[in-house]
Length: 178
Ligand SMILES: [Zn+2]
Image 1 (cartoon, rainbow, N blue to C red):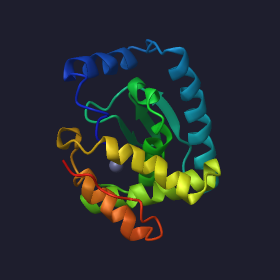
Image 2 (image 1 turned 90 degrees about the vertical axis):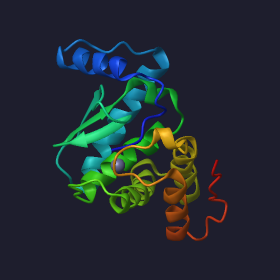
Image 3 (image 1 turned 180 degrees about the vertical axis):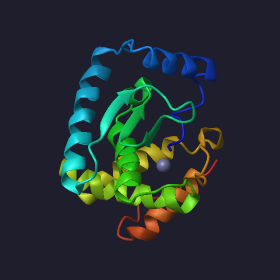
């Protein structure tokens, strides 16, 4: 589970998106969102092949909590996530949960998924470690607002500090607590 991009979309809107998904109605996407959705689909497909997981299917919708979640090979992303340059980092985090076979969401598990997500961005997208870390950091830095926290997650600061412990060469990984 990932924290929301922000808590701005109300639960009412989130529920509406879910209901639209359940009804089989296509969630309307902007041109940019559509392009990134296609990119994300390829990423999810390639990651499942690289890590030999069960096939992963990407959906645009919501899990009621957070901007993304994964369950039984189905990965759900809210359309607003595609407006963010770090959207692949969030998806990589969710794939990290699958690769690591996480069944529960604890602060430790979420941090492991961040680190695995960095590896996935490198192996599947061919990013350098620095670029992969920068993308994951971009997401965590934005989600530092405590209101953006999701169940299971520690604070974004704790997650950034954990990432720095795992990648000590990335001394630029800093937490700007508010
Ligand atoms: Zn998670």
